[in-house]
Image (cartoon, rainbow, N blue to C red; front, side):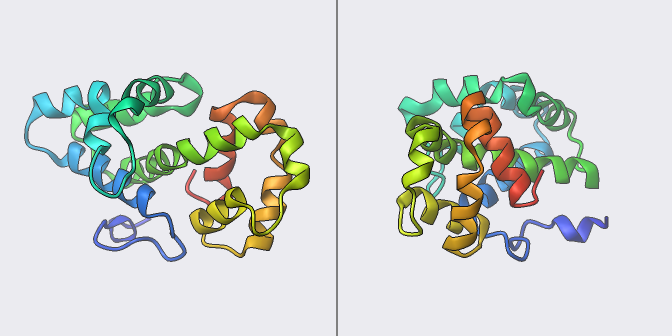
Amino acid sequence: MSSDQYTLDKPIPGYQCQMAFIATTAITNAAKSQDPTYRSNFAGNMAKVLAVPGFGLMPFQYIPFGEFTRQPELEFDHVFSRVASGDVSDEALFSFKCAGCKAASYTLAALIVAGGAAALTILTEGSDIVVGLASFGGVSTSAALAFAKGLGGAIASGVSAVVKAICGWVGLC
């Protein structure tokens, strides 16, 4: 993979989620920062860094979002260590895109889990969750509905599992 595949001046083709792009940009900019203190503090302040216009993370969400990023199964710790070291290799940039997807899909995944597996049976192509998934994945609502209906097992495992499923589905992790 060449580094030009991971430039941040434009989204990846088919990469429809603006929030993931904003998160990826913020993470990459933190890694590129010449200020080692800023880079090392990024892990503790990721929510504040992402609290920029367009990302949609409100101050009351900082603590739950911070707890979310510390869940070992989401592997944000690897991203944080790369940011702290200033690593902007191709491999690091790919991990930043995955982290951006995980950060951006947090709210959508939480809504899906809150609805529960039983709610999957009543979803339609016009349901807000399905429309949100379609927008996130840059796919049709029928494709998003088919994906959503298969999330029952992930829902039972919680928000982290749904986040991983979403980001795997869109091909960013």
